[in-house]
Image 1 (cartoon, one colour):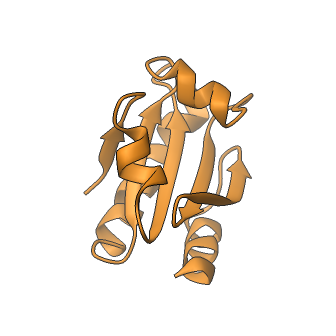
Image 2 (image 1 turned 60 degrees about the horizontal axis):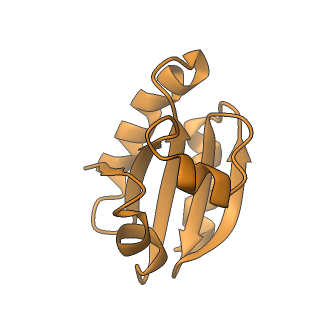
Length: 105
């Protein structure tokens, strides 16, 4: 299951989390973001219990978007123990995202 983040729950859900958390920075008006959405949903099901899979709407969370210097979307950042380890910019394949997740698990 995906966790929907915002500026108020980001620290608790991601930065204070012990383990691997993937965060999809997206917006509803972004075509490539909408294409990536179903891929993120599939990954959330496959990695349930192994990694936390999150989405954050950049329009609704300007603080986090600025903090992580999100200049284009979609951007996927994979955190381990609260530290950003991998940043994937643009539309990515499911295989590439899984490869990056598996390397951190």
